[in-house]
Length: 332
Image (cartoon, rainbow, N blue to C red; front, side):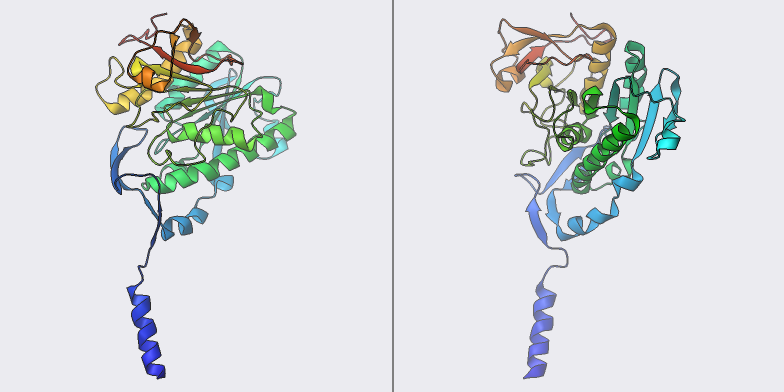
C-alpha cells in the first residue's frame, strides 16, 4: 500500500505546474505589446505567476534607490543624498526651498531624457531643490509585471526617504511637488498616498495604462492636495481615463503634432510641462468628460492653464487644448 501512495504523490506533484498562474494584471489577452519609456516595444506576459511574488524580495528600494540633488549651486553636477544627517549638511540642499521630486518610468534612469529636460527648466524658473529618484534597479527589469510591483515598493521607499529628509532638515511635506512619467506617474501618486496625501502638488505625465486599469494602487485624484495629469498617448503608452483632480488631453490625448511614433507622443508630456514652466501658455478648454476630450468635442466656457509650478487648488475637470508641432508648442 505504501509504495502505491508514494507513486500517487509523485504523479500528483508532477502534474502541478512549477510556476502556477495566480491572477491577471488586466483583462484582455495574456500576451500584449508594451512600450517602455525609451520608446522600445516588448511582448509581455501579463499573467502574474508565483515566481513574480517570489521575486519581490529581490528588489530592495530602501537600499538600491539613489537620490540625486540638483540646485542652482550645482545645476550640472549632481550630489547624492545619503540617509545621514552629517553628510546631508555637506550638500547644497536647503530646507527653506521648495523641493521638486522627479520619478522616471520603465527602463529609464536618473539620466534619462525626462530629467535632462526638466531639471534645467525647474532651476531656471525657481530657486528649488530638485531631487531625481533613480529606481532603475526596479524599473530596469525586462518583466513589465515585475516593474509594476517594484513601482509600488519603490514608492514606499521614496516616501520613507522624504520623511527622513524632513526630519533631518526641518522641511515639511507641504514644500514638495512630485512629478512622475509613465509608470513613474503612478509612483508619484503612490508616494503622495504614503505621505498621508499631504503633498501640495503631484503631476502625472502620461501615467501607464497596461497593468493599471484594475490596479487599486494607480494614480488617484486625492493622492495630494492638488493632482494634475497630462495625457499624450492614451491607451498605448498612457492611461486613457481621467485620474487627477484636473486632467489635460493635449490634441485629444494621442498623436501629438510633430511626432511620428507613440514613443514621441509619450515623451511630449514632459516637453509640454517644461515649456509651461518656462513660458506659460497651454490654455485648456473644459470638456464634459474624457470621452469628449479624446473626441476633441469640448465647448465649455471655462479655461485653465496646463502645467506650471503653481498648484491650481480648488480646480477640477477635464480639459482639451491644441499644440504646435515644434517649439514653442503652446498656442497660448
